[in-house]
Length: 526
Image 1: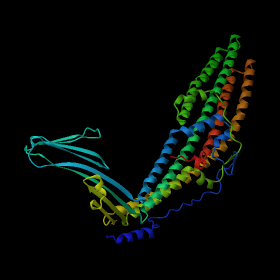
Image 2 (image 1 turned 180 degrees about the vertical axis):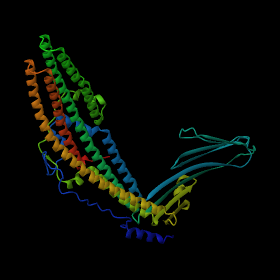
Image 3 (image 1 turned 90 degrees about the vertical axis):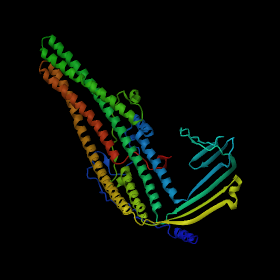
Image 4 (image 1 turned 90 degrees about the horizontal axis):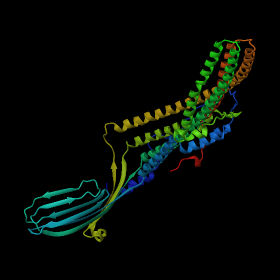
């Protein structure tokens, strides 16, 4: 190409800025059901859900504090945040391909020629600076004419070199000279077919996908904190119930011993009561172990050492009550609320853009290059016109034969787009299943709680009657023993059911995508 073709290339760059290879992305229109399949019979309402801070609906200040600290220090959340920063840096690198690239270089060298014999020897040194580093070389000639060259390693890596060349003993110092060189070169690849712009489009989608991944991690984290906190309180309730039953069984044992000493019962009743008490007491260590494990797990979720929350969470506290009403919205809200669906959609957008990146390799690449350089025996002579060299011109590169590599890459990107679309559809269907299951579990557990609560009241009364009749000798001790076991089991089931209502509600909030807010202040920056 000649100088006359440069305006032609520039004109092409101006006339075809919107030429983009590959398909334009269309957001998938996935039809979702108009209503939930599960019956809303547990306090759920098909109203707009307020899910940004759903945990505050339980009215538990300890839970509120745990969630706040977890979102500030959790390791998984911090990793997700750095991935956003990584994606943003990747966009900056990709956008750099849209602009000219300019480089500068410079060097200095001092040399001395050898002409004739001399008994005194000679020496010379050269010093150079370039974009790759700094170099120094010293050369000396002994009176015998031997040439010694030393190149010290200025990086401290221990790679200094010494070269020795025997001479004839006839070298003498010659003329010394200096050489200064400096130059600039620039290149600009014109994005006529939109390959780089498609890459920028993909990089922006990657940032948005990383942001949705951050939100998804946050949703999961908050749900895990709440679930482990409720399970901790459940086990503490079970421990409290166990200790209360131990107290009751000790009273029963005292009653049996009194009757045995009075000759009103046999030793068998005494040993049976002792065995029952020992069996109940044996459950305490396992419950205490579970309590410690939940506390340790909560400490890990908060980015703390395992025992950091021991003093704070060890005191037994009651389980909070679930809110009376839970707005759950409609299935169509899921695509807007669920970060994993939003992430899958952005990954599909990025995969679509990368088809265009691969397709652009089929077309020629036009570029403009230019350079200017100067050299001289002293620093000021570099800028003199007689010592300057410059060049400018367009270039073209077009693959003629690549053994089908480019078209194979296009097929790869098309396959990846199909994969991304399938992942998106799978995520949507999995989300619907998750919400439906959570709705059913939450509603049915409330029905179960009503039944086990009634069972506890009945078993307490049964134990009172059995003990009273036993003290009068109207029933045997087996009736008392059965009543105690039944009461213990009913109370434990009641505590588990109450905790299950709360953990099922947590699962429902998580399935609905609760726990984040779409606002500028909630977006990690860096």
